Each structure stands twice: as C-alpha cells, then as structure tokens.
Image 1 (tube, rainbow, N blue to C red):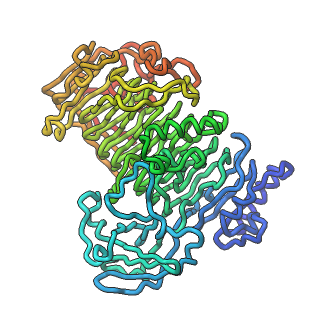
Image 2: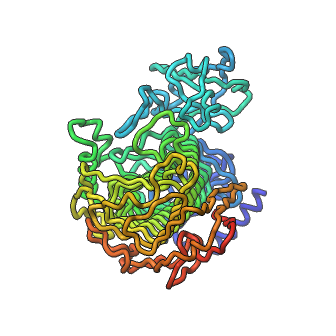
Length: 630
C-alpha cells in the first residue's frame, strides 16, 4: 500500500512541477526526523515539519497517534499562500497532549498508584501547574491542569487521598456515576505521585493516559498568519484557564494572528478550552488578580486600549474560519476568544458536553464564549449539553448569530453588556432559558424559543462601542434598557417553565427606557406579548409540543402547527426596518456595509417577500411536523 501511495504523490509532484519552491512534506509514525520529509522518506513528528514549513507548503500527516505539542515556526503570506497541515485522506490521524503511563501499583479497593520522575514532564509539569485566573472560581480547592484517562474517558480530580479511597458522586456533575472515578496528586522536586480509583479495571492492562502538554497545536510566536489545520483528531491537553484579560491558550489556536482555517477536526478533552481565538500576553495576563483595587471591567477596558496600541485591527488580527469541527468534553469552552476572533466565521460545528464535570466555576464557560465578536458570523452550529451554549460578552458589534440549533443547555444564548448591532435570526433555542440579555442594540428575528426570555439592565459598567466594521473604540457607555427589536419569532413556553410560573414572552420590555420595536410574534402556553405589540398573536389554548429527537448523528424537531401560525401578519426584515443601534449609531447591515434582508430561513429556503412565515421555517403546513434540523 505504501508503494502505491508513494507512486501517487510522485506523479502529483511531476504534474504540478517543483519550480515554485513550494514543498509537500509528509509525516508518518514509522518515519525519521533526519529524513527529508518526502513521501518516501517522511518525518516522524509533525513538529519537525512545523519547524521548516513555509508559505505555500503542505504538510500531510499519515495514520497514527502523534503525542506532541506542535509549535509552528512560520505562517503563510496570504490566503493563496497558506501553510496547510492536513491528515491523510481517509486516514485516522491523532494528535495528543498526553502520554501513556504503565507500572501502576495496586493500593486497595480499585485504587492504584504510580510514581513518575519529574524528568518525564520536561519543562512543564501539569501536576504542579494549578488552574487560576481572572473570573475563575475554584470552589475552595486546588485544581491542576493534569488529568487521568481510562480508555479515553477522563477522571475527576479530588483534593485529598480519602476521596480516592472512598469516592462519592458529585451532585453537580452531569455524569454522577462517572464522578466516582477519581484521582489525586502529590508532587515534589524529584517526582510526582498519582493515585487513581479505577474501580474494576486494571490500569496496567488498559489504556491509561495522563496530560503532559499545555496544548497540541499552538504557536509560541504571534503573527503567524494563514495556517490551515484540517482532518485531525486532537485531544487530551493540560490547558490553562482562558480569562479575557489573560493570554488565552487553547488546545488549538492561532495566537493573535490572522486568517487561520480550522476545519474538519475532532477536538476533545481539553482541561479548559478546545479552540482559542484569544489575545496574547503583553496586553495583560490576569491583570485583575494582579491589582484588585480596580474592578475587573476597568482592567479589561485598559486591555482593549493596549491591544489597539499594538495593532489590533482587521489588517493584522482575526478573519479566521472555524468550520465543520466536532468539539466536546472541554471543561471551560469549546471555542473561546477575547479580541482575537474579530471578523471571523464559526460555522457548522457540533459542540457538546462543555463544562459538564462542574468541578470548578467562573464567568467564562460556554460552548462558544467570545469577547468582541466584531463582524463575526456564528452560523449553523449544533450546540447542546453545555452549561451555556453561546455567550457573546462585551463588544458584540456587527455580530450575526444565525440558523444555530441549541438544546439541552442550561441556557442557550447570553448577550452581555453589548451595544450592538447584533442580529439573532432563524435559530432554534429550546432551553428553559433560551435567551438572556443584558445588552442593547439587538435584533431578534424569526427564531423559535421555548422557555423564558430573561433580561436586565446594568448601569454599573461602561463598555466600549466601535466605529462600524472596525476595532477602533468610538466611546464608552453604560446601559439604560431597550433598543431591542423582536420580529416574527415563536415563543412556545414548555411545560417545565409553565409549572415554575416564571414569566415568559416579551412583557418584560413593557417599561424599557430606550425605544423597542416589537411586532408580529406569536405566543403559546402563557407566554405574554409586549404591551404595545403590533400584529402579534397570543394563543393560550394551543400547545405546539416542541421536542427534540436524536437519531444517531441526525436530529429531528417535532412541532405541532395550527392555523394560528399562518394568521400572524409579518413583514420582511431588512436594514431599513431595523435601523441603527443607538449607542454606536451603526446600521444593522452586512459586514461589507451593504443592506441586509432576512430573506432565507433556517435551511436557506427563500422567504416570502410579502408575508414571511413566523419562526425559523418558511411555509410549514398544519399538523404534526417532524423536521430534520441536523
């Protein structure tokens, strides 16, 4: 088989020609780093290729497990001269930040111990590295970036040996039974000891791995632009807490660069974050903890201005594409980004099981948690079983959140202290709290909500707004409440919210200080309309029975439709209708400055120009509907 592959690549090189100096490098588990990296003489490590690859080069990694933290040395020069790192077609290529550990000694009752010399870890020992940072909540104990895995499943760190010997189920953990697989560590200058409760398994006969690396693919230098990473399985890294006021390191990330494409990967088991689009270190690193005399919000404003000083703008930073990835089992975020994700697109990713162990807490956990999502598109993602699905925090301006499927989250979407314009359209949000906001300048259009809409006003924080389609800060302002638009949405309060008697619908905007535009929404099961709503419909005696059904990799939405859906008088939502967000005086428009029209539904189906159907699906028929939504 190898001979056939060699012949194929040699033929490809002959046809394409080699005069340009562009190289195709290859990496194979049976290679050697003293080789030349050709298909017939591949490197053994991705890191060797990453040391020499230059703009236009392609690094193809062949089947196998590579236990590395790949630190690229160079970047591409533009979108047509990238450095591409790719898994071989049809081959399973795994990058792990962990190592296999054997020679466990049995203690008793399923508990085993291993003693590891610290030379095993090199310059970074995750069992001496504690998780910390601004807005991190440790729940009164120490947490390490290390981890123990049995056949790929992570254990739960505990703070003393007694909880390994006699583990108890954690009430907060989603997998309560799994929380009894515990581990504890002690470390000194010479060695690190780990005790772990494997229950009925023998760790010397199973695959047992521990975190040893702080990342899996992350540059040490900033400004390495136009890199593509695709076709890998990437997992098990000792990532640190990614605060917005700190250097945000994920298992993967561009590290304050421009134009990366991260696509078609399977990403899991990061101690904190999977993908980070976040900021670098010189603008501040956990600055609030370094100076508690000032509020954290003030520190973050200072970080923003320091970022502008070092070139935070569209020419240098952001414009990344994150698409078609599967991301799960990360305990802080699936994707995060403070400042560094501007002008980016996050599309068609499947994100789940984020912050489900619940051993620590803080203000930064979500499937996707972005600070400063300027002109960012978040579209067609499936996000479920997370503490919070999407969290758009500070400086969401020109942001569009469109056609996402969110369910089984504690909360689906939170917009916090943003001034807009933000467009939320054609989403399916089925949490008990599908949407919470403490923001202004938001347009919420053609969505399906179950549960309550939560909102409040924060007069205590002044946060930045920007020139349209730009990072440049135009001013700071606090929040007054209002400046919202709700058009053509479905509010279908579920039975659990009905039992709690929590307020749902849009009546909470009745006393907004700033103007609101609310019309043509439909309300079921006690959801209450805005008091001055035009062309809305309140249907108290009909339950649309909205539920989700998962069948393997497919997801189906069940919804009961009656004639009240068709009776809602709607209009096509456009830039002209939405107007300007008040604080930045910026239009609801496309990132290139052209007017927008919400003339397509969740699936991209053309909407009626005269009376588009309420909710995310155009032209639903009456009766029980089963709609494949993923």
